[in-house]
Length: 331
Image (cartoon, rainbow, N blue to C red; front, side, top):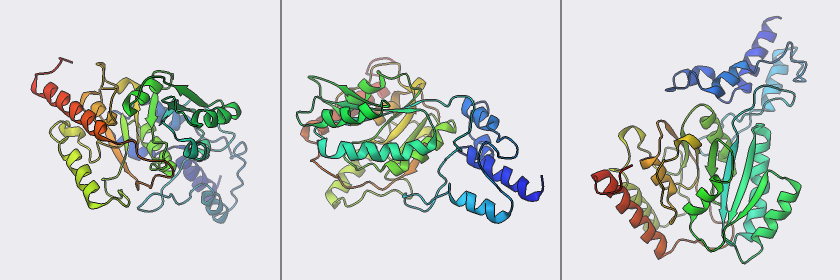
């Protein structure tokens, strides 16, 4: 094979991996990670017959690359999005379970599920979406059931007599065998376009990946000054609780992925909205990465935040500080 073919092999290998091997070599503990070994083994057959590629010139190569490298909707510019060829084979990737908690989201959940699947399907990763509904009195459940009938990867899980975002997320995670667990909101404020970047990082061997509004490139959207101040204060009070090597800029995010084995062995608080902080402080997490995203506007409905939300967050902080100071339960 000539120089053009060698270039094609190099570029195709980069596309078959979620992240460049050279980058992954420098990540702590990533050398022996099963996903890294998997990506190294996924070599294309000679000369691209099963991939359906005909690379006879550098122009052919450029045209081929342009079909799989598209600008992302994320702030800060374009990024690579993984799209392996349809004929690729190899060991199974780790399964992702994405939980979407709902309460009266009839108007938004259908469109969101269509959007999320359109983003995840090209990645060719095994996944399921669990919509955990707190027994909504509207038609949320009916919408999800209709979609689930056509795509069994979408599952409806109903909780009765319970409320609370954190509890709904844990309820969903307990009902899947996936080793990679994720969560996003149902109201449209978390853009599905960021999911490939989160998946890229988690497959690279990170224990946790967070969609962040406060890391460089992230945005809080059209928040008024009062809301920005409240959010900044809520983040600031977590700083002493976070471990030195794991401090993140957005511990209040509701968009993140984590490996199942990194969940805390002790019970976490099921009430309230801030599960991520609990996992960061008490979980078995060694590596974490933040991916910037722009916080969007709620597409339908109204916010579920109220005085009880603030109260539950205060209780969480009190418990975590008590544990840190040695007054709480011993983990």
